[in-house]
Length: 414
Image (cartoon, rainbow, N blue to C red; front, side, top):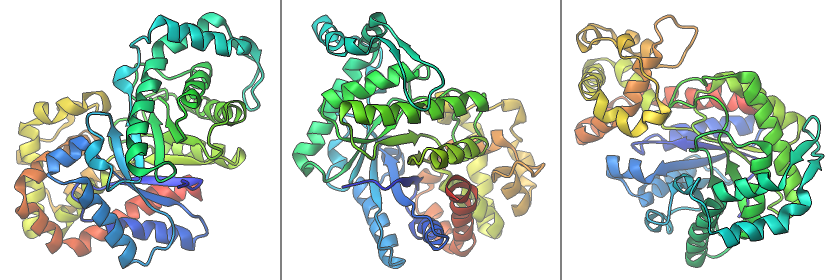
């Protein structure tokens, strides 16, 4: 099972917008660019919303049937480990192996020594096409990288083999996630991480390294864009080199996690993949749910009342709601409007503050981030929320399609 050159992950917290999401990919195909949709949902999100991997599969299959989509699409077991992967195996055909908790835990010394012995031939100065100047490599560097990452890669291998035993080889796409670490990987680190992946015989088709800067949920990239551009290009060069050196999957490509709304780096990504004829996977983080909230507000009446109520409850519970996402949000409480103020807003004012339009003076990234993590409040409303989605579907669906198509797919791939 091969992942195409371009793929894009779409999270859908409540599983109601699959058709609206897929319309964006249909339109891209009409514009001449094939992008594979990947519906992704993590174990944590399933637990909060009380869904199962089978429901995500049903959503994807129903959308594909409804729009007569004949190209490839995938359902992603997002950020799974050995303790969480089993419920995803039957329904999913894309597995994001999350081994961040193992990074930094050293493997036994004999394994490190063996790794250094086998890869000491790369010590010296490497010339990697696409990277300016030689890449210096010392034996101590190889040992340090093995000490930091080897156990994590071996854990990825254990998760992979668990899935392979159940589904069979070549029946699913494998991604290795290294993005939730303390610092970005250097080109040298990425090179030897890929060597370890080859040793584990993991047929990874994407790898998600950590990049410089902050990838906060649902808002723009915060960091040095020039540095990101260099890291992204260097990583593309390392992947191309590693494919040849270590016999990795020929379609191995970079994955950018929490890629939703990172508008300021879409240009560098688009240029890099065009110039290097490379692929990319971009995984988004539930911003479809924010379009639902905006659509409810614009629908007026009970929809607007519900949107305001969700914000009011999220405001009162912000410490609880923010805690699980502390590493990927950055909210200034002083910039959060009081719930009493929000109660006076029109639907257009609510949507303008929430939707990510940086040219709009009303846009409030702190408000947006709090609503983003506030999906738990909506989930607790149960049928009241789902009923509102049905009542306002005609308002919500165009926002969902526009967000994916015009704000994401077109800047990245056209």
